[in-house]
Image (cartoon, rainbow, N blue to C red; front, side, top):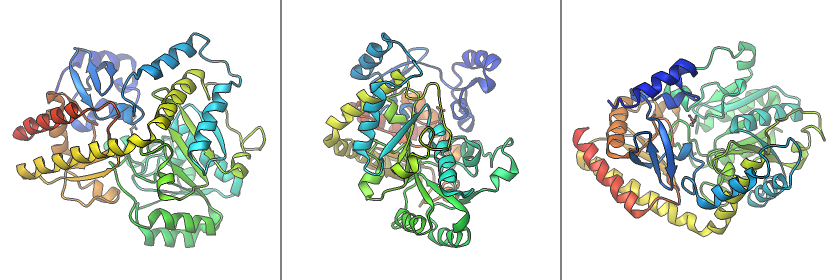
Length: 427
Ligand code: HOZ
């Protein structure tokens, strides 16, 4: 297994809890020490020895334009020269909110935060305040950040490390969160029937990206919308990953379903720390200062984050027609990957949508957390290290999504497939 950067990781471990600032970065489930990054440009990321990798993690999604896009960097630099934080309103915040409202029709009002976790945490508090109810519903394997109420049967690092929940979350609070299997209409109908009058909100990743990519089955999201509307339950779409990844808007634009609230993050910050919650005016105006539900943040709407986000969204708006080409490139790559694995006689199941994918090391189908967990994670770890050795940077966990950016080229695809060929020889 790869064992470079041991000194750096050991040094980090002396001063940083676990040596990392987010658990999945420790590469525990792929059995190796993390490679330390020095810089990144376009579709490439470079480690501290200067080695180049084609990057399919893209900072876990935000870098859809590729790393260090010149227009985004120029916007950040221009803004930084005028000051980096004011704790007072700026026009940039209005411009950002306008772009979001224009792109996603269900959003009439926006509140910026500094992370996706803050956005989902706010969405839950707001739903509880608005409905006067306490319970919430989520789905197994969906990860909505690390707020107490949402860290129940969550995906991402929690699934990667096999942690069922987390100590530190009071039992009394955990009891207020129901978690159901993703895509299980029967369980959904029964739970709504039983708990409707106590449920403040249902929160869902409309495309699950944190147990690996798992797609909603036909009718699942539509039924969710119907049942929540009928019962006065706030429907929250967590589009932190999917927002602006498939089109200039959210996944909701493509399926014509309007949630009551939407959480955003990642791409809207162009690589700077950001989050946002948006939705119906009637609900959003319950936030203080117009309403009584409190939420705040010194760095919310931070000028650097706004400038990087606005630059990114403006480029995506201009490129709206190019999303199809990005999808074609991802389809072509996944198709060739499937062929190479089949030739080698290794069973995989690729779940993909637009420019987002996961190669599950199993026959499939993968349609919920239970089926995702049947993957051969040991084999994934060997695959991960083989690809890394060859110069391809993949997620250090079976239970995460891979992404393509507009900076990826045909040459990147060819090299990736050649690297896969080499990796398969030793798998
Ligand atoms: N939970 C994130 C991926 N879904 C990982 C964040 C990080 O480690 O940077």
